[in-house]
Image (cartoon, rainbow, N blue to C red):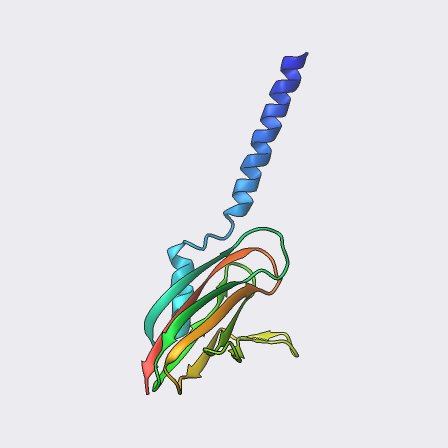
Length: 147
């Protein structure tokens, strides 16, 4: 009798694990097609860097903060492509003063990219997060062009 319950328990556990793995693979942020779709949003700009964003866990308000050096006289474009969910990118200057974001809170509108004409060379910070405030995966691509 115990062996029957053990087999049922084992099979149930394997099915649960298999179904969880399938749902977790619904969006693959490492998929080349996903990266290509996001890269298309920087048309007219030279590719500078791609930032893979992965936030795990169920805590609300999680974000990934990164930095890059921007040069005076260049215009930068930043994208935020969430794998099946809306991703927010927010740009800050070297003093961590808000410059701009791709999300308008008043009308809850997302923009595929934001453009920033740099007027001072230095380190700039950008924060990636998901609208849900929780876990997700995505990519942020930065492009530039000289003015």
